[in-house]
Each structure stands twice: as structure tokens, then as C-alpha cells.
Length: 219
Image (tube, rainbow, N blue to C red; front, top):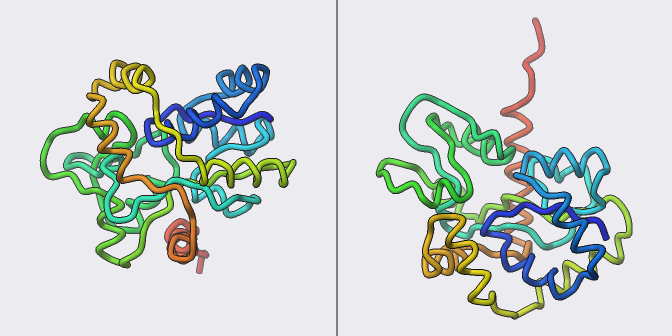
């Protein structure tokens, strides 16, 4: 298996699971093919990795599982903050989500959003929920080949109930500048199963996003 790795806290449970599930060669590939979401999107699109958790806005063209990154009412790691409008180069879905929600400002995602303590920022998942009363799907685990193998892997992860070892939590705490308790509290906001409501929300987002990003025809 050649899987792209987004080394964000919200996928920490998945990588703890993969550490037990993959062989040494597959683990080496996982650590080689890693990057921020926008980079992994490109690696996946170019076929450099077989599977990855890719941005929802990119996923529509590919075969995907029912495993993804879901926020039910808020997410805390995807914000629009007061200031000059500035996209986050690490994300594709978050930039478009801000646009479809009509929000202007500096977009922050991941660890830097979790560290951001200034008031006045808008949680994009919360804003989406307030408007549509639906969870928001930020990303999906998709694959380019070996569908049975990757569907099986996704199913196994969604059934997995293992805990994150303390030493791994401490590693991420040192790297992110957050405490282990803050990381655990954040992970409680994240869901991984894409069920009926999540699929309805994803369909709505992709439809609205298509209209928002389409180039107007010349008269």
C-alpha cells in the first residue's frame, strides 16, 4: 500500500491505527509521501500515491470510502479571522468553504488555528452547521487502485477502538505547542464516519461550491 500522509492532529488516530496495520515497507512509504493537504491532493491526483485522505472539493472525481474528516457542530481547526483576506495555502476545501459562506478574512487551518487564541474568529464548521444544520465533511479517504484493499482498510479503521499512546500524544504536544489535554479535547470534535447526513452535506457543499467557483460566461 502506498498512502499519502497528512501529519495533522485530526488524523492522529488513523496513523496510530496504520502503525499497527502496515508492514515496514508500507510505513516507510507513508512517511516518505507526506505533506499538507494541498500537497497530498496533488500527489494523489498525479498518481504518486495510491490512496490518501484528500480534500472534499477534490474527492468528487475519485472513488472514496466512508471514512473521512467530519465536524458535527464545530471544528476549532478551521477558522476565518479578522484582517485582510488571505487564503491558507495548505488547504483547498477550507478556502472554498469560506467563499461559499461569504466570509472574508485570514483563513487558518490545522495546528496554527488551534494555537490561535485571538477573539473574533469564525469557526467554519460551526457556521456551516448554523446555516444548514448539517455536519461538514472536510476530507475523504479515496483511492486510485486496489478498491477492495482500501475499502477494507477504511472499514477496519472505523471499527478500531485503540487509544493513542501517551508518548505519541507528548510528541504531538511538543511539536504543536498544545498540551496533551488540548489535543484530546480537539479530537473529540472530530468524527470519521461518513453516513447519511454527512453524504447529504457533502453533496450540498459540492453543488454550492461548483456554482461559487464557476467562471461566468461572457455575454
